[in-house]
Length: 599
Ligand SMILES: CCCN1C[C@@H](O)[C@H](O)[C@@H](C(=O)O)C1
Image 1 (cartoon, rainbow, N blue to C red):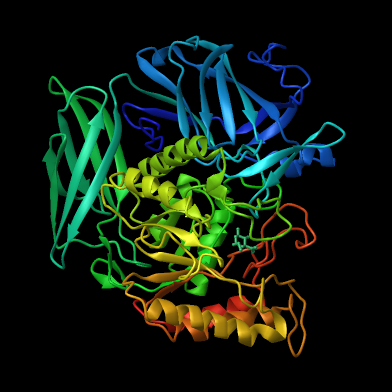
Image 2: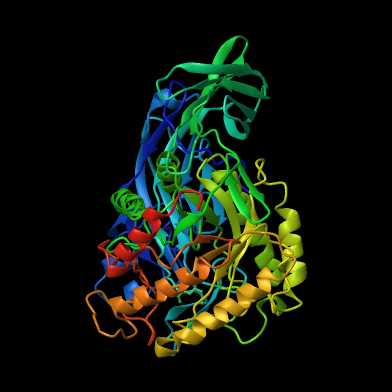
């Protein structure tokens, strides 16, 4: 678990410099980079954009599909005036694992390709001179790592990723790298919880520093007016007549922490927060004590050219598409997204189900994936897997806990929950994650088609249920969709007649749709069929009051592995991969903009 994951800022005491741009890049198929001295740089490099996945830049298949070790290198300068600071490098995402060297000195390693980590390089850098950072990275998939998969060795000796999941194994430095100069005694974490009412809100804060416990704390409104102050390592900021953070009507205050030593401020950290509460009560999801009906999407960080890289332009477009269509939420399927996505959602009043990359923990649902034909949790890899799983749950919550947009934590996507061996795994996971979020937001995981009300042995764990259901596509498809509807209703009747008293959100449903394919009457893959399927699901949702959300799969088309069930990727998008609407977008817009917020 990382000690602190505060987002980098520049202020009187801190400096943040992004090292984005072209880095030196080189494949290392024989894994001999260290032996060849690449820790201090290497010759004949490929100039590689950062942040970006390396895959789609190449014109040859061996490079696009490359699996194994690869290296990045970048020279950087640290001016003399930083001599009294702690110098750190912060990597937003190195997918899937990395070892960091500075001037040839090994600094640290990190496992997990969707969460940040920092490297303290204070003793490795040369002040007033040029330095070099190199990373040895690796993108192999394994059953004891997140996301789960295998790495095959082909007869020609080349390695090949075999994901147990349906998104392309885009790899590289997918998010920005920051060079940070911060005080040697510094603020490294904070958390907030809230009590809100019509005319008063209280922010309960807790702040952590490497030394000292003397803090000045203030809260300012959007006009910069101080509305509350406090002091000490923990305390309350009471706001009279607050403007609460509401769904699709956001308001952000700025909280500021000052670390004070001998009457002098020695460090400062400010962040934007939203005054709101999240609760699950019976079948209801409540924001500020008011029921909310989720409408939105499963998404992917995915776009042409840069693959899984965070792209501010794409995110701006996606947020506008979600506002246009009347969405109020999304799931960060199937991994935590770049922090800037959560900042966008904070500002737009959009709720996020934040998901850790625990995906592929079951016989892959789609036959073209290289999944397993046994219970995933019977494997001899489970102990090692669990260590990485809980570590990434801790880092996800540590990183994202202060965002008002975060509604819930998805601790797994479609795990195998219908076998006895799943129960001890999830018992431990839910026990070990219980205290991680100061706000105690709901924890959940998505339930696959096989993990029905009848079959799943793990329904006791989630605080709300996320159902992934594909009648009309993976079964009972085409003209048989009426049987699909009947089956869906039969399952929901079981939920209805049970004593389960928790909300159900449909977190996946949909149909692959080729944009521009029209057929009257409809046929699968046509835009008409996608609407027919969505309309069927909406009829069912509207028949059960404990269905408290609908998030069709997916916001946009996205890249997957090659396969006889994929036409250059997954086409279940409501929008195309270049973010243009299919007919279904107008169908959903009509439905979602006519629903009241708390429908
Ligand atoms: C049936 C498996 C659930 N779901 C996972 C998601 O990652 C896939 O893209 C989606 C699909 O196959 O379209 C199915």
